[in-house]
Image 1 (spheres, rainbow, N blue to C red):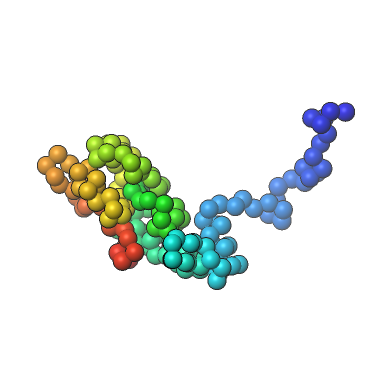
Image 2 (image 1 turned 60 degrees about the vertical axis):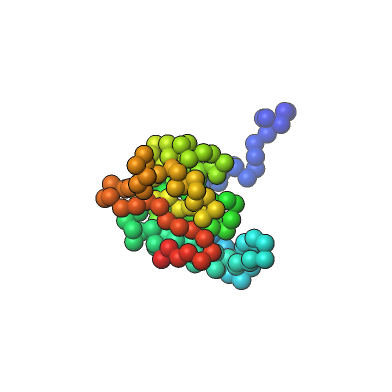
Length: 165
């Protein structure tokens, strides 16, 4: 008998049901990690440390800040950030608000970033100050800020001292 003919004993007579199967989503993961391991270190970035509880709280604050700005299901949030805790928080906080995250390659030029913002329909751009020059050049032809459907600026600052809430 070949290995292909052998049935996996864990798949026999065991249909998926609430008692034996629950999908693990990223949002479910961070909520569970914060509940089960609230004081364990979740993020290490240089000398900076954050627990699962702290990280989860920051992600929820980001989601709340986005929701207060009218961002929700069906919206796109672009992020121009390095591999920092803020980028990690975007990966959880943006979906918590119901939006889709569009991470931008920080090595691209302003013209490519402007195209991606427009083509992706980003209603908000979260950018680190490190990339402020590129973001400024990605503004429209007359130098105006990229605007959402309501005419509001779509660029939010992001950094250790900036508060989005």
